[in-house]
Image 1 (cartoon, rainbow, N blue to C red):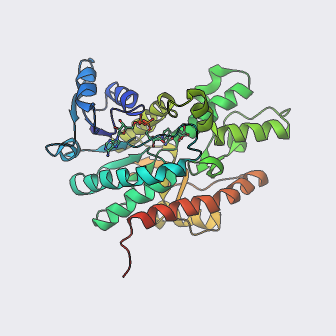
Image 2 (cartoon, rainbow, N blue to C red):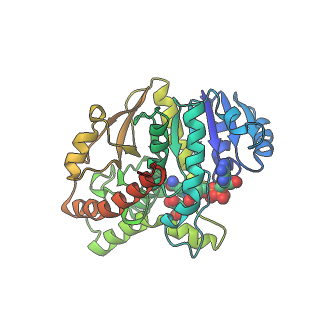
Length: 334
Ligand SMILES: NC(=O)C1=CN([C@@H]2O[C@H](COP(=O)(O)OP(=O)(O)OC[C@H]3O[C@@H](n4cnc5c(N)ncnc54)[C@H](O)[C@@H]3O)[C@@H](O)[C@H]2O)C=CC1
Ligand SMILES: O=C([O-])CC(=O)C(=O)O
């Protein structure tokens, strides 16, 4: 099981690489970045876990060498938000090109790898990866994932706080659907494994939803110029990568929300589009993972009228973000 981290020397990349090094299912770990990755790799290589670790830089075909034989590729490369950069969409200008170029490397060197995209704006960078794969004739909608796990992790934490017991947080499970930015993040709190207190009034419920949707802003503000969430993202990314790895190795019944392509009727994409009442190409929904990646995209299940309204409110921004990503790669028509 070879895992590759692209952007491995960054704020997310380093702790994520550490957590992947600590995962005994990973036998080989390749770290690629435009700076510092060999140092991070040598540092991690002293940890007494099974995987061999190597670091690569752009010269001498570093990207190709990192990706050769990859099973799982995680991408946290790109610039993060800071105060003044108000939305994740503002990162598009720089990150779209970075993700396109890295996706080209994957499509040509490791087209069968499972690709986990962390770089923002996720609602656009996932379509960019898919379009690059289409251009190279290697697109498989089951193998490309937008990592929205941090929203799920935040929902578990914030719900446990409302319940007054942080020790519950690892077992609190709340599906978060839609996309990964502001109003496109839709927590389905009515499906929480641990019901919210009946005494929670409407404004407290709105506050909880808002905190999950804008949790990223809380971190950007607190870091005060030093970037956005890195450690919680590394935790979330390693958790999702760990689930993909377990599923690929044959474990059944693993379900996790993730932002995926809805093109495949066989995996439930069409049914979800019908439920949404919109011909969206991507959506984050609870997905059952299997040996080939996406095994089944679940529907939204029973949701409250208020949640239905949140899903409706997410669709215009989500759709615009997706189109922007697709248009970035599309060959201009003559
Ligand atoms: N999906 C999610 O839930 C989350 C996504 N993010 C996103 O993750 C991305 C990374 O964030 P941080 O690690 O905090 O940023 P960072 O600036 O600390 O690290 C980014 C790394 O990417 C590297 N890089 C830049 N261009 C590259 C290229 N062409 N090839 C390989 N590596 C390259 C940089 O050298 C740097 O080491 C940002 O876009 C951020 O918005 C952040 C938090 C949560
Ligand atoms: O808020 C940001 O820019 C980083 C991010 O995606 C998150 O923390 O959810």
